[in-house]
Length: 448
Image (cartoon, rainbow, N blue to C red; front, top):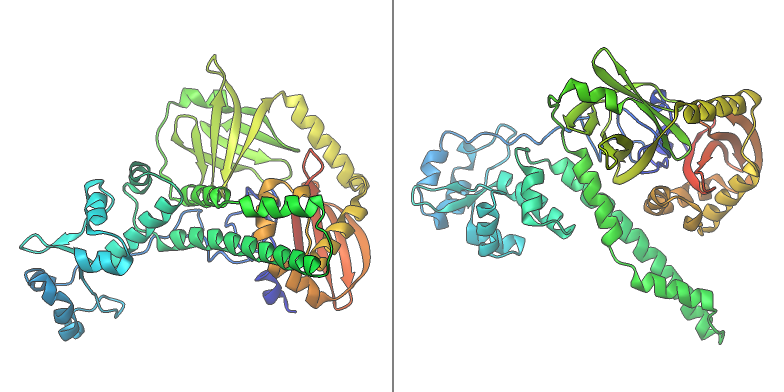
């Protein structure tokens, strides 16, 4: 298996990722502020310009002969478009098709009344003929896709209007959100089907189901799409382009300080009238104000919001990234310096976490058997593991049986690093644990 093929299947934890900026070509897992977060080693699901912003879909401006078309009776529009397609092409050579409100509603599967409601809410602005007939083209249908996708996540029309206000239709972002949601639903369905098949076979053999098996079946039966939809919605919101705003510079001094994000220190520094943030083991990045107490990164699709206590003093921050929100309370400087000094000592002395090799062998074995223990992962990592379970298992099957494990050391961010030899190749595995002992990040790549 070549490197390029592997990167297409590398595993990342879909949350604020943990790693180093020099690793931005690799899909990874954990808390990591990447210049571009990549799913399966690609940036296709969240394409951007390299500065953390999204590249909107450009909609060609109206062509010169559209004035004539817009004066025709709507029932003739499709026929007219076909007749003069050669004269009514967009700049990319695609024929432009216009639909009436009735045609658009029928083909999408909604009502004309819904289209008018979306227009009244300001969500969509169809073009009009000289007789005031509404017309829907590619741009309007693309916007309808965004609206319907966000409605499915439970947002009200007012919330959708606030989210999309002033934003160009972004099909890439919308498709990425839908892809992640559908992948999660597909994985859940496949796991539930596998459980049902096993239990049916057990009953057919005359065996009784255990209480644990019945509880697992009940849990699967009761699962809904609420959590995955909420994650998809937050991913969508967090990926939207941000605009820097001016706020009172006097507020900056209140944000500067030390915060604790699980096992990592989060340091906010005020320098020359600008704010910078640094996670333990990672480079310093500037953050930019979006509003009072709300900041965003330009180097990565992530945001920080600051919380205040009842006296109005900044008491913590929340990292918003990849569909998750992770709180970091404010702490004394010594709490972060002690943490980072202890980590530096682990790195220097190459000291893994307790039972490190046992934990690694267990997680590899679970994936080879197709039975990963998601309960021993933090929720963000469990979400990514479920989404990419089939791909990881297939890659490990191609590698063959486990042969040997060799400890390499501890990364600057506290990850235990191993070379793992399989029958048909070698991989480098890294993992890190949360404060409660659960896996919070797993990273796999070819050995180097």
